[in-house]
Image 1: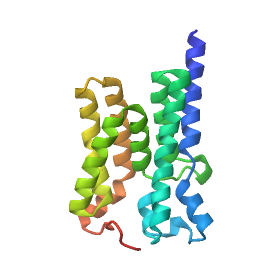
Image 2: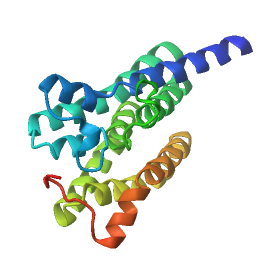
Image 3: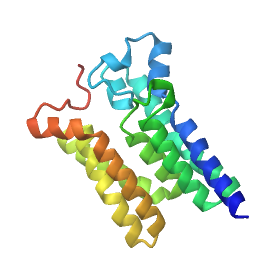
Length: 200
């Protein structure tokens, strides 16, 4: 039984990682014939950088794809393996987006996938994240500042609402998200961070 539990956990983690590794930004921009996304703006493969190509539709599709790969991973793992498997799939999907095997482990910064796994595990948390993101983004026009602020809110909210395991998981994801945004943080402090909608 213990071996079976470990097997389910490992499968959930790997399944989440493989789904999370799908680089929708790269795939969609290549299909659309735009320049290599990694040569645009920040070089990131996420929706914010896709927006810097001037292709709003592609940016929206990238955002949706990067979100839903996390949501699908969580829902399917939870259906077949239970709540713990769902959380491991969430971790796997997030790590897959940050460090995709297909791109030499150089991926995105995780915001959309963070929202997607949160949507699958506790949808009110995803709504709270989005509300904070929209508010800060509207006020500052900085996508990175909005994401960093929203990610601070989620773990304590989950913890105080009685979802302590989820609170701990998203504390880890938030730390990783901040780490991946270390360049953005430096640019925010220097006043050189690109604003939403600005082309490179």
